[in-house]
Structure formats: C-alpha cells, structure tokens
Image (cartoon, rainbow, N blue to C red):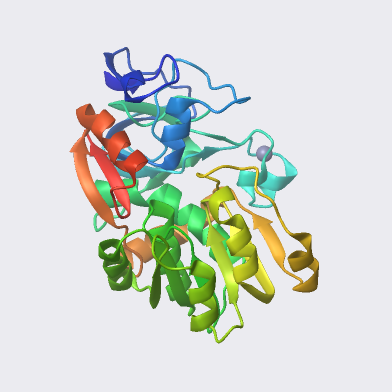
Length: 342
Ligand SMILES: [Zn+2]
C-alpha cells in the first residue's frame, strides 16, 4: 500500500512516500481503506519530534481518518465490508475505571493513531472495532476527516470543561486554526458571544462568516485592550487557548472574575509564567483538556449531518502532496483544515 512514513524527525524532507504491506487485522479489528485524512498540529510534532517524547519510528502519521471497511475480523458485528466509516482516533483499554465511566481519554493506556501507533496517511489502516463509527451518506469523507480531532477537542473544552452558557463571552485565541474554527462554532452553538483573535484582516473576515461576533487582529491590536473595550472592562468568561506561552499572560489577564482558561495545546511554547495574583484574586480556573470522550463524537457527527457544525476546509490535496500540506499548516497560511485525499 501507499503511505507516508517518518523514519527520523525533522523538516518536510522527513515525510517519505513509501510502498509497504498493508497491516494485518486481529479478530476484533477492522481494516479501513482510507479515503481522506487531515493535517493537525499534532502531525507537525510527530514529524519534528518533541524533546523527551519517544515516538515509535518509523511511524505513519495522520490522526483523522474516514474511509470504507475493507476487511473485518471475525468478532466484528457492527460494520460490514464496504460500509462508509469514520475513525475515533483515541484507543483505550476499555476496562479501567475511566473507560467504564465513558472518560476513555483519561485512560492510562490512551493512545492516538498517528502518534503512538501507525496513523491514517496510508491506503489502509487497522483499528479496534470500537473505534469504527458508521458514517452517514450525508457526510463526505473530506468533511469527516476534517472534523473528528478538532471538533472533539473543542467540544470537550467548551461543553465539558468550561461549560459555556448562553450569554458568556468567549475569547477564542488563534481562531483561524482547525481547533479555533471548531471552537468558534461550538461556542456559538451554546449561545456565547465569541471574540476571536487572528493574524490578518482577511482571516478575520472569514471568522466572522463562521459566526465570530468580534475579531481582534493581534498583529496590530492589543488583545487585552480590545477585550476590555468589548466587555466594558469586565473581561471574558472563558478563554479558549491552544497557543500557550506567547499569549498566556494576556489570557490570564483577559479573564473576568470567576472565569475559566481552557487549554489544549501550546504551539508557541509550554513554559509559560502565571501571575498567581490574578488566579486567586479573580478566582479563575485553569483547565487542561486533551481530545474528548468517544461518545461525544456521535453527537458531533449528528451536528455535522444536520449542518449545525461544519468544518472549514481550506485545501484538499492528494496524499502525495503531504509535504505541501505540512508546509501550509506550519506557515499558518490556512483557515481551518488542510485535507489529504487518497
Ligand atoms: Zn482504560
């Protein structure tokens, strides 16, 4: 099968197009003929490497997958060969306390395809049957592959962690990224007023089309001053962040009393400094979040089918253009998602 593999961490040249044998499946696994995948910031970490983190090399990257069932193990009942499916990318043990409570993403054995084992940048992908979800005819493979990671991540941040309510002011930092565009839509769905930060006026216009009520161009405006102006000095109820270090202090100071900062990443660096005076005086909550519960993916798929959520797809490229896809995401030239099709 055709696939993309990383043998050693580095720049775009580390992404190699190779021909290897397709994976074999166990009795409770499904072999998927991948039709679409998409690039996430995680793919850049997997390619570049993270100090202190060991990835199983060589690895096939790709965390989102939609496709067709090519083969199923004898114990698999809920899908048939030929079914259109989407993959829930988080694999957990299935029998620990967290798994049994439905919080599979808190499982100690939790791992992601494309990070801890081979992923979706390949013609075929093998996953446990409980990670395979039937896909409605109304949802394209591209839409599904552009949605799973970012909407699941943003859903947990907004719905489960920050518990956004109608009337809340939510600051979405880095609104034009995949997870940012998902965050804007979910915060709107739950009745918030959304203020989104981004780097250009062109991107800001697209975020407004997506539902952002206000935008801040962080290259030429002070985010803190704009937040104060837009909230009559009160601050926002929720800051939704995945940027980290570069914006951390601003995030903390942008919060209203009793507000919550929810973070799922640190693309600009992870060793941020927190002025604790703001934390206790304003009684703010700092909430960490990674991925989301598998069950919430079913709700997200319902929203995609009904059109209440819709991924922003900026580019659709063939798998062979994986280097260009990584380049676009790394340069931040996109709004939303870059999808690869097979
Ligand atoms: Zn578990």
